[in-house]
Image (cartoon, rainbow, N blue to C red; front, side, top):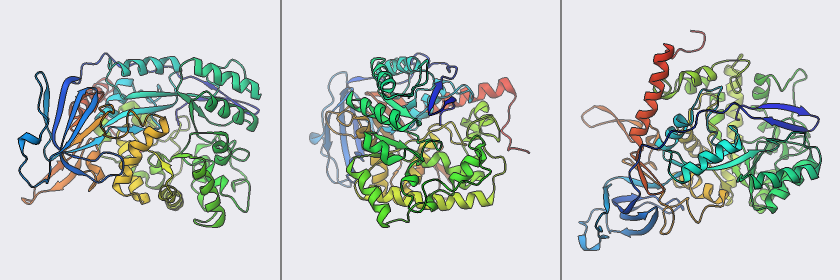
Length: 525
């Protein structure tokens, strides 16, 4: 949902790039990588679906995990002779009583936007503070060269940022509309030469979509698609999957593939797609128009997507406000960590994308709650049948602030029916698989890159402890305290103090407040 300017030429979208946001500054945070780093006594959740095990010692040399040593019963005294020995010049991190998870992967991470006023440093540090060590940028909205520059610097750890995968918006940089299969193939070939990792599609003619997706896959690149409602009547999720698409974003194009008594959504006769309240209000009525869960057609569509190894990236969180606007608007982190410019972008507006609160209330929220129940039923069953479901945030829109919205996505997968271990697997290993990077990242295993999240509370018992603001807990002494919040984010063997990263973000927000005299106010009050 990156804010873009779209010019419609019959059946083709020409993407115009936003003005670029400021790039991340030179890295001043993080310690390491070390010749040897030993994480001592931690409980391991390795991302593969295995249950927690601990205590373990995790040995890292430079940026690779070289040993994972199980130390026996958690209640027994540890025999020092069983533990990996620290070498000269090595570093120990005492994590007894803590939990280690693989670095999280955000499969739908836009790197800020000028209309939101969100510089790269702000976005990157919020991600890293929430344990997100890898992101896929769908559309490269700041321009491919800009994103590739930040990708290169992140890979060299010259900036504090997750590792980046750049998926160019289809048609980006084209001087003329792409209306033929040959033009589509030529653009895809040039995109690969430009160094992109893949493509994000919004929609085009069936001829163009089919040619572009097949050519992209032939070149060994990956792809995703936000199936625009302006094109789903002639090209839905099944068409994309058959052509070789890697993943679908959100859910557009999936209910349309599930229609049995119609071929087009039941649009009101005064509907106008350019009116975003129309667009999103009617989208909340779409899943009930699809085939019923577990029906013959519902199963047929699911089975075909499974056979094609198709990935679903639902981004539940980005529409969460549609079913409870007050909850999303009053999230406790906004006042401290949401930039004034971003808050302004969230407010009701006829100009800002995703700010469609023209007249949003009980009736719209009830429809969206029903929509979620059906949508979540499909996603959960897809997972149950061994389908790949990943986690993406699409933050910076609709009251979802970077990092915080990603953790909300984990909560919503849990609501959909995922076991917490299945949630973590979707956030880690399954994302790595969809990126073609599962031999390097996505789980804590010997030989893989050292991307690790350390937290001093059990996230399986309460995913909310992963929020930067932690979770509320009452002690036996009747004192209210905060538990959790990521302590350390380790990326490429470099140890970052997650609390310090959040402090840096707060300073950025405070500085803008000081300049503008801004105070958080609710719309119309």
